[in-house]
Length: 436
Image (cartoon, rainbow, N blue to C red; front, top):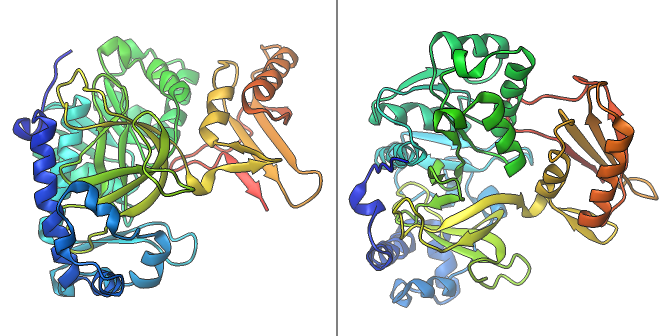
C-alpha cells in the first residue's frame, strides 16, 4: 500500500523530536493561560501553581483537571472565563448539542481555524485521500464541527467536495453513482444506513460505485460495523476501507486523530495535543495496553485552550510503531465508550460497544435497539433485533442469549421485530436507551 504524508517532516519525526516540541509548546501554553485565561489564572494561583513548575512533560500532572462542568459553568457564552483573546479576534464558534441545557463551546481565532483545517487535511492524507478525489461529505453542517471541518480542509489537498450533509438518502446514493464519488465522510451510523440501502437496492458496488474510502467518526462503532460498511460498499475490492477519524468540540473538532491505511487504531496528533490515559476512578495514569479515559492539553490553541481536559472517552493506547511510518504518534484503539455511557446493570458494567460487537457478529441481524428500564423492579434489559423472515430466528435468539450470558454476564429479553421497524440514523445514533 502507498503511504502518503501531509507534513512529512513532522509525521515521520522520531519520538524524541516530537517530545522536545511538546515540552516547548507545553511551557508556552501554561505561561499563556496563566496570564491570559481568567479561569486558569485564578485556579493556578489558588493552588500555588506557576508556569515555572513545568520542567518535563510529566510535570503537567501537577496541574488540575478541567471538566465539562467547568466549561458549562465558566465557558459560556463567548468562551467566558476560558477566552484568552479579545472577543473581536474570535472568527467563529462551534458548539456541542447542549443536551444538558448549556452547550460546550469551542472558539477559534484565525490562526486556530487555519490550524484546524491543516490538521483535518493531515487526516485526509493519512486515510489515503488523494488530489482529485471526490468527497461526499455527509456530516451535519452548522454548529456541529463535522460538516465544515471535513469540507474546507479538503480543498487544501486538492479534493472536490459534495456538501450533502444529511437526509434525502435515496438521492444521496444516486449522487454517489452519478458523480463517481470516491470518498464518503460521515457518522458510522449514517454510513451503515446508506450501505444497507445500497445492499437492499441490489446495486452492483464494483460496477456502479467508485467509493474507495469512508471516514466514519463522531460516535462509537465497532469492527463488526466496519466489516459491514466495507463489504456492502465494496471498499476493500478497490484497495480502500472505512477509516476512523477522531475529534471533539473541545479539541478542535474532527482532526485530532486519524486511522491510517493499516486500520489499527487512530494516530493521535500529539504535536498539537498532549495526551494522557488515566484510570477514570483513581485518576492515575495507566500503561499502554490498559484501558483508560482520554485526557488532553492543548499545545497551540489561542482562543479557548484547555489544560488536562477529561474527555470522558474510553480507549486503549497502542504505543508500538506503526507500519505507516508515523512512529512518534501513538494509536488509540477505537473509542469503546464514554464514561457516562457505560451501563450499570445488576452489578455488571456494560459498554455499548460490547453490545454492538455481540449482536452484529450475526449477519442475519439488520438493525438493533436496546432498552434498559430501571424505573421498575426487577430491571428490564430488552434487546430488539430486526431479522428477515428467511432466517430461523429462534435459533439465532438462542445463540445470542448464550453470547450475552457467556460474554456480558447478563440474560436480556430478546425480541425479534419486523425489518425496517427500528430507527435508522442520519447523524449520531441512539441505539441504547436507558430509562432511570
